Image (tube, rainbow, N blue to C red; front, side, top):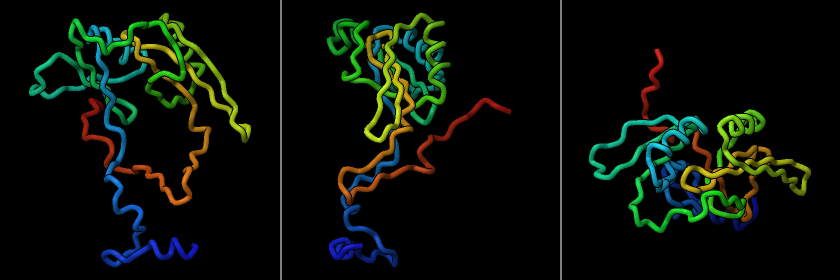
Length: 184
């Protein structure tokens, strides 16, 4: 540890804590992604049948049409758009990997590709090779409202903080909400 790093450490409640962490927000994990949709039922069908999400109960206090889905440690909240809503994608068929999207880690891209074909979902595949020779495969497709989804094996790429003093926080507990599994 260099002198600057040693100066940044201090004692708090009897244990050393890096002073760089004092102003970081106490975040744990991604909770949910919210998606506007033209038809909530169609979107429920897509996210449950194509991506394996599970519809969950939603607080009755929410006084607008929508649905909550959950799986893989993240929620998707579907919100019925207003008829005149201009925030939905205008071209539901357009696929551009550099456009806004949500991405899911996948353990078997071939099985996912087969499923998309069976369900007649138009998709685009691409493979990338990083500087160190690591390969990453991606599949892009749109949900019924034109929001792009990526399926990838991005775990192949090593996460390296750009700043040498930055720390990546990986939640090991408490990031999954309490749930009923409907299993005996």
